[in-house]
Amino acid sequence: MRAVVTGGAGFIGSTLTDRLLAEGHSVTVIDSLATGRLSNLEGARSTGDRFAFVELDVRSPEIPGALVAAAPDVVFHLAAQADVRVSVERPLFDAEVNVLGGLNVIEGARMAGARKVVVASSGGTIYGDPLPEELPVDEQHSQHPISPYGVAKKVIDDYLYAFRFLHGLNYAALALANVYGPRQDPHGEAGVVAIFAGRLLRGEGCRIFGDGEQTRDFVFVDDVVDAFVRAADRGDGVLCNIGTGVETSVNSLYRAMADAAGVASDAAYEPARTGELARSALNPGFAGTQLGWSPQTSLEAGALATLDWFRAQT
Image (tube, rainbow, N blue to C red; front, side, top):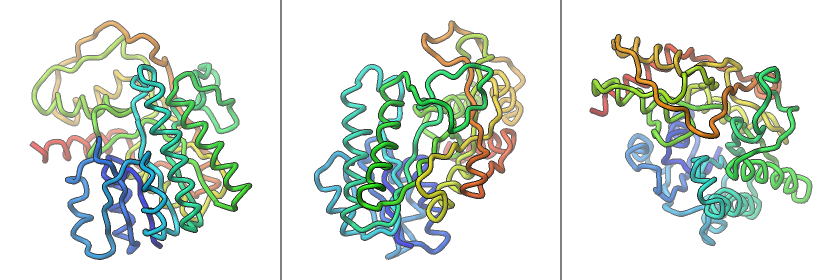
């Protein structure tokens, strides 16, 4: 398989690139390096002519030509403006990257004759603010996002549906929960894991905003990458939740990471952040049916792997 991975120098994208190369596929990474890092591709760059890197922003008019030149079978679109708070403060910028940039990639995939586009959607935002009794949320839940970031992700899903109808371009959209693991950027949706890891290893105190009982669905990056790989050949024309279905409080997350780091002290508590969701979790059952996928990594094992990676960077 020939694959293009947009955002392939990022946290999830580089891990996906490594997996694809390890399975013998050819990969072209397209990344602007605005947040991605070439160091994440160190292993990929040593694989010879099965790997290529193109430094390009998804908003660039050169994107369709770059995709045509790569001639991919599958395009994995992970490049994004990924900070919900930035989308609230700069909605036009968010739309430029996530809507126009995403559409640019989809049109390029069509022009290149790709058979499928697999995109990273956002399970934490496209469903809005579900009621506690609706958790874990499944794909039948109404989509009423309450952030520009969530709106952009929903719009791209709609474009994919239209392109499949109009042009026969197949797709799968993966609604990701809070992804964490090695190479994680502390500014992403699950940045709290990276922040805790860095501070615990430096012997610094950690802060928890609010009472710490707010919950998230933390899913390990290797499990997420496995879903992307499976979606290359399965789950045509669908949206699948990629999460664990388990609500984990920030307090529980801190304790798991502190235990893995050998730290006995408690975190400090600060006032809650305005607008933060109280609870979040995704039902992954449909991904099991469509992709044959289920999460395999426990929070304890994932936290230890993440800490080990951050420790190796110091």
